[in-house]
Image 1 (cartoon, rainbow, N blue to C red):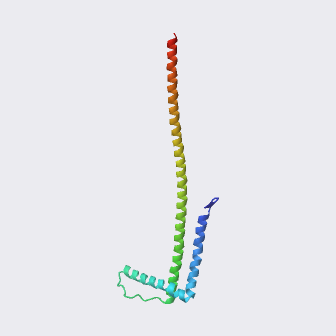
Image 2 (cartoon, one colour):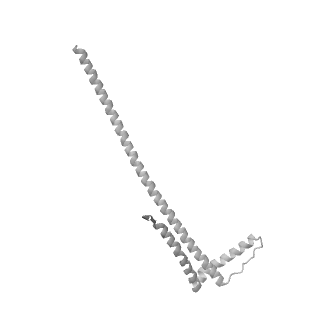
Image 3 (spheres, rainbow, N blue to C red):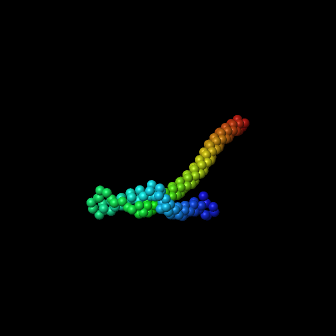
Length: 163
């Protein structure tokens, strides 16, 4: 959708990117101040992230894996979980906007191809009509030639018989 040369779609995408950052900060703040949200939504991803990070680092260093990774403090788990939640939101919005842009371009392309198909069909119909007219004209020319040939023969016959 373009108004003049100003792409509305790109402005929409830029606006959504800009809005996603404050929304992410708001969720982080909400997680810090609301115990239920912090306990259910933020701390578990923070602990899982810590567990995976410690195990991955130990694996990369080729050290022995511990049976149990010590959990983070609730404050650190909340901070990490809120950061993860914010990043998930930003990435989700980014993926949505990418999907939106790809879909919009695909529909635009399909519409363009459909228009070309219609023009092609119209041209094919016109060409078919021209071929039909050519065939009809060739048949008429043959009939006229045959009639002229017949008249010419009759004329010669009459000229030969009169002398």
